[in-house]
Image (cartoon, rainbow, N blue to C red; front, side, top):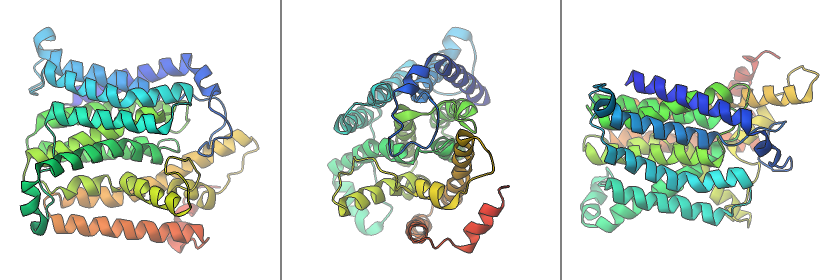
Length: 375
């Protein structure tokens, strides 16, 4: 497993390095007037393409290491499984990479793309959500096979866009994805599911390789393609874990991924209330408010360096926020009531923090965190 992690990280770092070397023109196409832009300079947004290529290499290695190279890694992983991962990832990431190249692909086509990837995942992996973890509903749920499949499709189609919404600052979405990968691998290994653990380890490795270039210097961005890759692989793995192992509560992947999930739900609600299209980009996401209201300028004369430093200082706030959900998810992965309680606690805490920041009511604990950073 460690070898897979190292190989995938090296492959992703190499691919990202080539993109940085050859992709400056791509960065020039990203307008400085985009509301979600919080960086200076021309940075390529093709990290997702590089990570997809590295993931393809990782899955191929798992399938071919023993028959071609005689490396016995002890993981039940064949060519059919590697091909399934590749097809699903390609279907989901293709529209994101096209958007990263052109910046002109309509949002509805990207939604169709991730929806197609979700349908392919359900068909190729045989996915469904087998239970809710709530005894009151599970009796009826077991009789509604179509609902089990429909919820799986909806979750897998939406999670890529949820990750895209939190992908705003150097290292933010990548580190959140890496933390979630580590949690899934940990639980899968506890259950003896080396196949699932290996699939997620591939994503963890390529994310590490990407972060070498992305944080703290912001030399490459994941783009829509990268966000879609993270959302799809983590979503599929979460559903598989619950489906294969009855002892895992279905609320485990919900709590594990509640930050991007709730960011997407709240964003849709916020825009609908204001009479806007949910696909319209804006600068009112939680991480953007943290950047503008809590992270203060540092004393550097160069404007682009000031922006980079503020960008880098934003992500740790959200990493800590993520750990507050991931840690209880790991500790209580069997216990639905506890997981549901922590999920509700996160939602309440998010709304309280969002309202406080919007109203300029920055609490004392946030001031203390800000003081940890030298000015």
